[in-house]
Each structure stands twice: as structure tokens, then as C-alpha cells.
Image 1 (tube, rainbow, N blue to C red):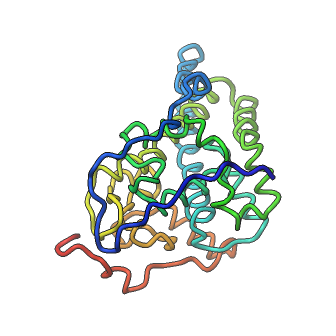
Image 2: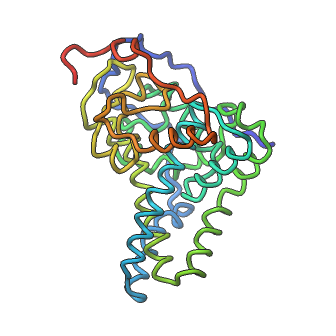
Image 3: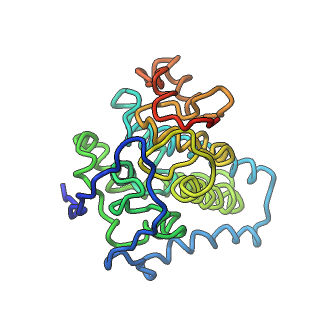
Length: 301
């Protein structure tokens, strides 16, 4: 296994109960976008325009919505809540299926994704946070993933999951699942389904996911004092199947449930509860009563 260069760490977290300040964070000299290597990412945004030549059917639009939310679950319910935070347990077989489903979103492999997310939580909005909006909104939204410094998988952050050979293989060949999905859609339903159903939903999925890194550290409201600028956003929660309850999540990352109250819609949590009911996952973690009051901001909703 090839390991990536270790990310320099050492910035202490702020004391609990004190939120991060709003001072901008400078980027390191090697945190630069490789615009040439990033061409495929930007071309992905143009490919859906191919539908101008094929036309668009209502079926293509329905497929786009289905693939957006279907794969959003694998990002939020698998890449995030399982591989990053291990907030529930599952079998080796279903673990691989969750990872494969997440990889179809074309957001790199499960070990890469989870490794950098763990790093984010350790240094959220501190100088070592690699995608804090305090480094710039667009940097946090998507430009950081186009930086060569963050191309390699941080295996030192994800040793627990890197011991599974199937996950290491999938992480290395992370383009196989989206290519297979795109090919199957084209063979089954033609070019318009490929352009709208697959490519457009993939681009929308990119930015839906990226909003959690960018917008939910800038806009919204705070219920809990945390060591970062995380905020809750109901509309980001709707487009990300529950990830918009970001202040809740940073307050208690171990919880499978991120919408702490019944009115905080968290579709990924509901799907995982259904999986638990049929035995596919188990030991789902819930926030205990003490979590709701610890470091709560007086007068917050």
C-alpha cells in the first residue's frame, strides 16, 4: 500500500464552549489549483449540454432526480456517517456495497473521502483545516479537491478502514463504479438519459455535497457552541438528505442522526433506520438527553 505524505498538524483545538473566530486563514504555498489537471472536472459541467442534441424526456428528468438522491444517500449515509464516523455497524458485504454505491457519485474513493473528512473534524476552521471557508468560499466549496496536495489518500487518518482489501481496491479504482453506471444507463436508455440522468445528476451531486463544506460554515443558525463556525441550514438539509444540520453534527459527530428533533428532516437517518429494521445495519448511535443541553447557546432554537 502506498501512503500519502503526512499532512503537517499541530494546531491545538480551541477549548470546548468557545467558537472559532472569524479571522481569515492563509493558504499554504503549495495549496494551488492545478488548472490543467482540473480540466476533466470542469468539462463534467459542460457534458449535460449534450442534451441539446438529443432532446430531454421526462424519464431523463426523473432518472436525474432518482440518481441524485440515491447517490446522495451513499455519500451521506455511507461515506460520511459510516466510513468517516463509524456511527453504526454493518457486515463486510454490505460495507462494500455501501462503498461501491458511494463511488458511483464520482467523488473519489471511500478512504480518500473519509480520511480528509476526519482531518476536517479534527481541525475544523482552525489553521490546519484543509477546506475551511475561512480560506475562501470557493476554496472550501470545490477548489481544494483540485489541489495536487490533496490528491493522495491520507491513509494515516483511515487506518481502521484501510485494513479491508476490498475497500483499498475500490479506493484505488474509484472510477470503475461511475463508469459502469454511466455505461449501463447509456445502453439501457440512450444518450439523453446519459447526459441528464447521469452527468447532470453527478454535477448537481457535486455541489449539493460541497455546500456542506462551504455554506453550512457561513450561513444558518447555531444551536451549540462548538470549536468551529458550523451552522444548521434547513434547505441544505433537504438537498443533502440531512447533512444541513451541520452544527448538530459538529456538536456530536458520533451520532447517526443529525436532525436532532422530529421537525429536522434527516432522510439518510430514516433510510438507515429502515436498513436496521431488516438487519442490514445495527448499533445506530443516537444523541442522548445530555447531548441536547451540553454547550447549548442560551435562547437557541
